[in-house]
Image (cartoon, rainbow, N blue to C red; front, side, top):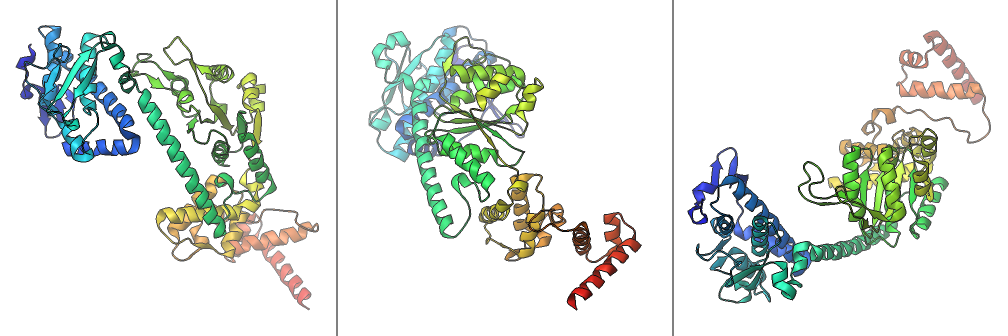
Length: 542
């Protein structure tokens, strides 16, 4: 097979149900103007340098995969023919137009392109460029040629229609052949410029997010909404202590361990630690340690090299590296397998990691906040959690109290959730009637803050008026009975029994049959007690 024998009908397959395949691979048909608009958006979001890095690396991956597909799909008479096919494929795809006899950028004269969609779209959407702008084409040619040659080859553009030149011109060389000419272009192929651009964008977004959050809190304080630091509600002393300790811990680089039942808001506390720290402009990355098998968890945390295991077609950055300059939140740390615990401990102590499949270490710059709903001290005693990791994590240990121990926070939290849900649903914020508020405070909330949030979402979805009614609440919340509490003088058991029986009777709508069944007493016994209560009421009135 020779490159000049390639025809579009040999490469393109169209099936009414399967769609389009090009060179045996699934392909997409995209409008050139739409791609130009995407280019414009990338430039506006990431700047020229960031957009160039994205499109260059995209083109490189595209070219590399196309070279592999062409090798698998055809028997080439020589490597030179396989290499020459790259330019013709680009022409058949409509990306450029070149002469078949002039399609090798590795020659001394390079390649002159008669038409480049990329230059045309740059002019259309961004106007005249100050430098050559066919970034995807450079990436594609570099990826294709590198795959064929088996060594890195870099294609650069020195003349471009987008800059005002008569035609686009490309030349390809090895790293050594380019010498110092490649220095300013190499970072676009390796991702350094992209990483820097993304970091700048992320920092700008973080600053904007912080300003918006501060403005939102100011508005909420103005209208009397109860949300506090980091979106946390802390009216009771227990939660106020947690917030105070979290804010103090945030000012250091100490590792923080959050302990509390599921749904108490540990992740929100972790977010407060991050937002109040010097790392607030960096990323906050979270992972649930119970959601992945040990091998997958290791790859997620530490990353992996290309070819480290089946399916690892590209190298991957781990979360310990990806959260650089920020905070990594390890949720459900108590579920982490012992083998992974040893590796995490070393990473925290040495501040370095080794990706799966690599034999060298990489430095990391990340602050770790961990959370668990297990009593880790008991897990350590049982041999299910490493003692050394436990002490490494609990430099600062915070216990987030369950909602049943922070009754002062129930109604303020409910109000916060009502406001949030109503805004998302585009509805007016409903109010809470006295009976509904009373019922919310009676419930034990075994699901904690998460359960309260879900209950308020249901209530807003089902409410038919400007107020939440009892019927809008979940059944278990509606049926909650008063929790015993010592709030004044000690009362007799008879008084408590009377109060409880009357509460069950009221819940059952006055039905004595259902009440006696629920209480586990005979109907005659219930009737006798109720009569005694009535006589007592009459005597008190006299």
